[in-house]
Image (cartoon, rainbow, N blue to C red):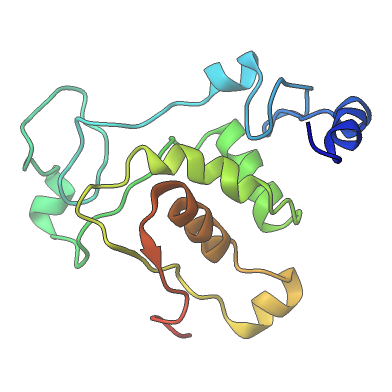
Length: 162
């Protein structure tokens, strides 16, 4: 037992962890209540090897959707942990515009499960200095920091500039 344990206990009663989606009290930080959890549509294989759009059925590891066959993307791949819906939208907007920077770790925990094994460096997309000034942070950098901490993969905020 540490000297801070009584204070953490009191803080846990006065300010219990809350669902990132709706604010309902939950057992631990960075968790969702049952209703919000079932409202999230988690993405995973099978998906397009080019853009990672979900497929209805498995077409093989290197299968590409019609859009990527017609106009191949100029990037190595993009991934999303969840489909954009009401809960995911709320979480993203609260982080981006509401200053809820703790949600960066909440998002990173879901993104971490889809991080390819061959990734050795995370590079967040930079914001224009005026956006950083108005928000006070770069949400992509916060998420990359959290993914790096959870996964042990290196990250560098300075590789790209705007």
